[in-house]
Amino acid sequence: MNHYYVYIITNWNNKVLYIGVTNNIARRIYEHKNKLVDGFTKKYNVYKLVYLEEMNDVEAAISREKQLKGWNREKKIMLIDSVNPKWEDLFMEG
Image 1 (tube, helix red, strand yellow):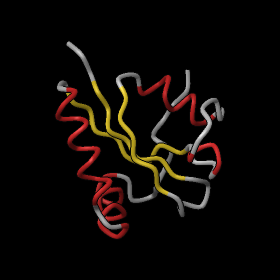
Image 2: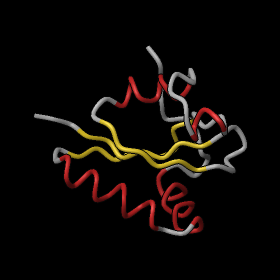
Image 3: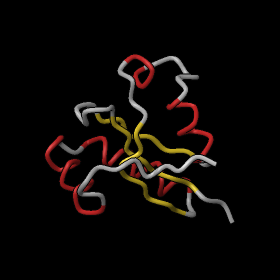
Image 4: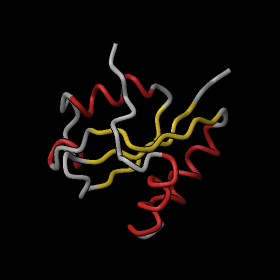
């Protein structure tokens, strides 16, 4: 069974939000944390995983990513707060 992940990451002071989708969350967060991919997350030092959804269908994951990207900042913050009120980094390396 395949697994797909919709995730939200932020920077050290939780001011910048980035929403993405991947089929390998460990690899993708490692790439963000180590600035291995040029772009928005590298430029704004966005690396802390604060929200994660797992799905079995790639189309559903892409659809959910697009839905979350369309939300305003307040709604995104409420979503994160509902499952991770302290905005702790959910990614454990190793």
